[in-house]
Length: 189
Ligand SMILES: [Zn+2]
Ligand SMILES: [Zn+2]
Image (tube, rainbow, N blue to C red):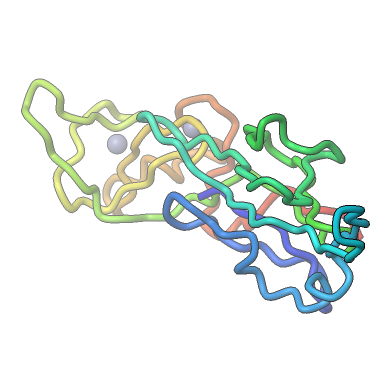
């Protein structure tokens, strides 16, 4: 699952991007509300107006790992790698820096951790999903791992430890298979 690195008082914290929509305003970053707003001068009525429209991260899925994009409302001060999103939209790449106002700094990471889950679907026989290592079918409910990088499925049972059989994914994509590995990348302080 892709995640967002959020800088908190204790340091960088990985926040999972669950579901298909993540409201950046939902991050509890009290400093940002005070300092992150941009003010400009409205000549029309000689009043100070406050900008800072909402921004979301949205996932689009088409079989493989989801593609995440930042969608910003008009007036948002969200930036990706220092630039405002063109027409309010910016597709995110691994390790993109997101800022909202001066005080909120985030990093998007597409890196996911592998986990063992009951295999969710059996499908029709001709479309049976086969293990990326042993090429035997994976049964409904069998403990299995979906590689977070290449999306292949693998058995992961005591008898068939196909995922953890080697240090890297059997699909040769380079994903480490240790189930307690943690993230390989984090922003630097
Ligand atoms: Zn297998
Ligand atoms: Zn893989």
